[in-house]
Length: 245
Image: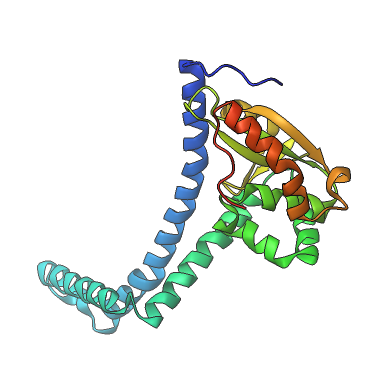
């Protein structure tokens, strides 16, 4: 597929925005779910316990409300005192791990590019790669992540695409892992139907690489082989290239 002209097509602009917004909304939903879970376990359950332990519910409604407000203020003061402490850091790490755990099982595993059996193979082959996929460590590192996935699974392909060709003045080079008509996108840590992703991203295909092309190469060797070609193409067509990896 050749690179399309960078037109200001209103339909493709809306498509790109909708695709990006829908993907980000899934992240927001998981974060909101974690906030609710933490709110219930850290605030609501202790409040209910205190309420019944000291029989605060027997107080007049106004006094009961004021007492609960003071307890909430006390919680907030404790939060301010502990947020930069070791305990505060520990709570944050638990919260962060909770988000990643839920997002991985709800969204990352959902798709046909990477099935559950594939994640097991990745775990056996490279635990650090699986950790990166489960967390935001893979965001911005599409090139090495997709390369490592392809090496670990020995199937599928890496597809270099230019995203936002109708939307940005200087669109961005990006890499997707593609398999079974689906793709895994490191930017969102999610899987999408490949054709829908290309349409949603307003993307054009620049290059495709299969396992046979990289099986005897390290990431550095592969990158060195293709870097000049990609950089020259990006300079010639006024596109951004890779920022990481």
